[in-house]
Amino acid sequence: MNGRNFSSSWQTNILAEARALSMGLFVTAIMARLISMLEFHTRVMETLLVLDRSVVQFPVFVIVLRLLSRLIRSMLP
Image (tube, rainbow, N blue to C red; front, top):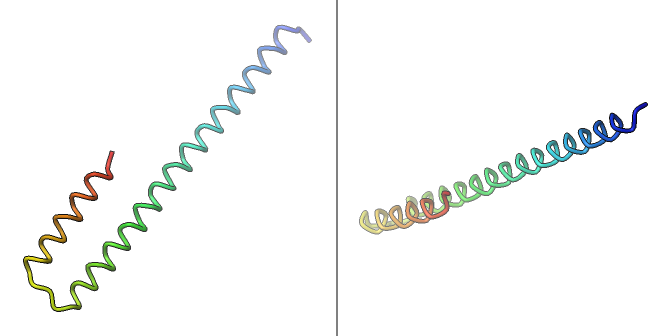
């Protein structure tokens, strides 16, 4: 076994493992972001259902929707 080939294969293995780890972290970060967005969406929908059930004037409902849309836009990259 040549020392140069061993070193090269060792470095290649380390690079492959680093890429796999970084891809796994990237996918995990995306999944965490999606889960937090789903939780936020669920909270928004619950709020809207509560507003819908109560006696709310239409202008108040529109103001709440505008505030929520601004909040969602500020969260997006």
